[in-house]
Amino acid sequence: MPSKILVFAASLRTGSFNACLADLVAWRLEEDGASVTRLDLGAYDLPIYHGDIEANDGVPEPAMKLHEQFRNHDAIFIASPEYNANVSPLLANVLAWVSRIPENGGMAAAFGQPVFALGSASPGGFGGYRGLMALRNMLELQLGARVLTAMVSVPQAHEAFDEGGNLVAPFPKKMLEGMLASITEVTR
Image 1 (cartoon, rainbow, N blue to C red):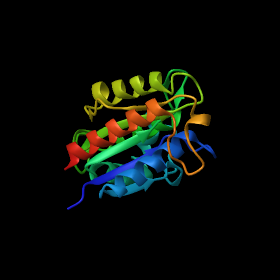
Image 2 (tube, rainbow, N blue to C red; image 1 turned 135 degrees about the vertical axis):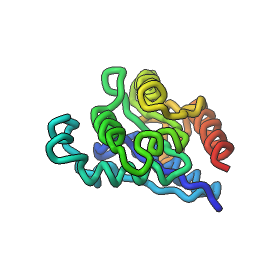
Image 3 (tube, one colour; image 1 turned 60 degrees about the vertical axis):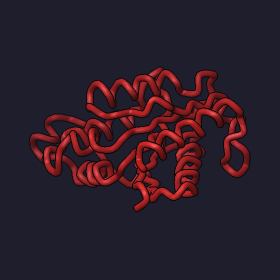
């Protein structure tokens, strides 16, 4: 049975380099025989997390559906942009809501069961690396996730992809190969 891998970008912006990276990772994993779900966070309309919403109305249905996606996959790849050397507000909100679900194994099923792999693409010189470290911290220390050591960071992203969406920059390409090999090894 092929491994089930969830792939999404934590950016909804048109022309997002992180969406491009997520598409590339999904394609490469499928090419390697994995069963890939390419998730669009824009399809999950979530309010900004607020304890009163949770207390009065419960956890929103889109968060329940995201929890189901997380827990039903062997691995999750997140292509996350960097916002002020941190996690994108969109992703922080998604993770906050998914962590609030007590049913169906709760936080352990959504974050402790699948293995996480991380990547970022940015027009800047660090390639979103500082945001990836903040995301790693959030996933591992706050949510109890197992995050693969190998990550992919794509600096100068506006020049790093060819017209077909493939990485042409040598070092990010090498990082991508290492991260893909890690996902494949862990999920087989």
